[in-house]
Length: 273
Length: 218
Image 1 (cartoon, helix red, strand yellow):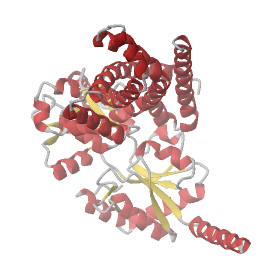
Image 2 (cartoon, chains in turn cyan, orange):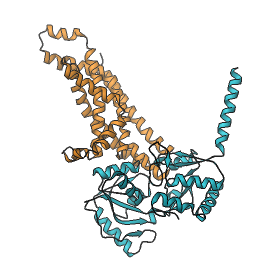
Image 3 (tube, rainbow over the protein chains, first blue to last red):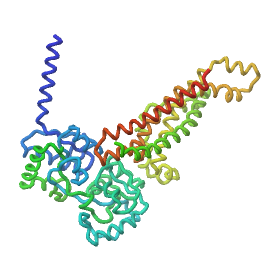
Image 4 (cartoon, rainbow over the protein chains, first blue to last red):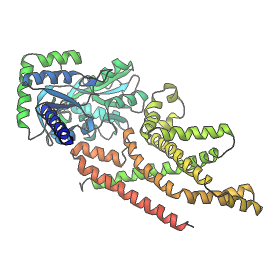
């Protein structure tokens, strides 16, 4: 009796495992709107969630989306908690030492944000600077920022390109404060504990819109350099088969206009690349 | 693993500072509330009981979040002079830890006071010693000796509790460990080193308490 029961249990277990075996598990944070977030019922939504379903259709595979805290995202991928990361993760040289990235599917610019009325509002800088090969105007903008941010507390989410940029010293020695989620960064920006915050420009506009708090962008928008080259799917280094499958699916989705359609829906503008 | 050690040891200093300050304030809070608990006045008694009930009955993480993120959301609170203190994550952590360990300490001390044999106090009284002196010279020393084992436990729990400071942006041992992981993506190695440092601190505290127990034993 017990023998038969255990056998049945084993078979069930085996079936469950094998049923999940050919599903692609995609890790996301669910706390970085509009890239990925959750609705009131706790369901994962956002640009990347919808894009993930589209890519899975093109790959002809079943997918499960798994939630994972941002600061453990890459370790969780390496430890096979899931097979791919789609979490607004920019492709940077530092991350590429640990994992591979598919081609980029979307790009965004980063920006500083302050509360309305802050002394950091209305800095005299160009609208946007690229840090891959900074030109004279970009270098001048960095100098302006260095002077303006000296001794200020700038808040960022931990383990992000934004933290890397502030740690790089390009804007001098600022007092960097790191948070587990972007939500917490927003809270402390609004409470006045942070003089400024740095994140994706859309993350702030999304927060300002939803909370009604007077959060405004300031200084130039940033791209290139420490900010990486667009957002791609993170995949384990030895998983070249899956990497190729994602690259092909992104090609198809781009050609059919899926990426730009979904991006426009969530960002309000075409953030695809 | 080895390259992360100097940074982690530097962060251990932050952890030790958090721990010692919290224990210092917590001990005073604990002693105060233990005395209030022994008070015959029902309102005072209930108030002290309510305090320890709330702080022992809710997770430390929730307490630190309410004090740090919760109070920061109240606009009126930000306009008071208290904001100077509460603006800093460091002080928010100290306040949360002190109130938490204070609640536990008050219970430890209260039970220690209550286990003092009535004979000791009666002996004092029969010698004509005043109540005040009986309290300071008989009750408090015995209570401290009685509560040493339990208080040693509380110190160790609090030491581990300080790791929650990293959730409000403080770069303590856990905070720095997480930071190193975020750039190296090697959680196991770094957490093993950080864990060993915590273990070593426990070892020191444990032996210190053991030594004190022996010294003041009877």
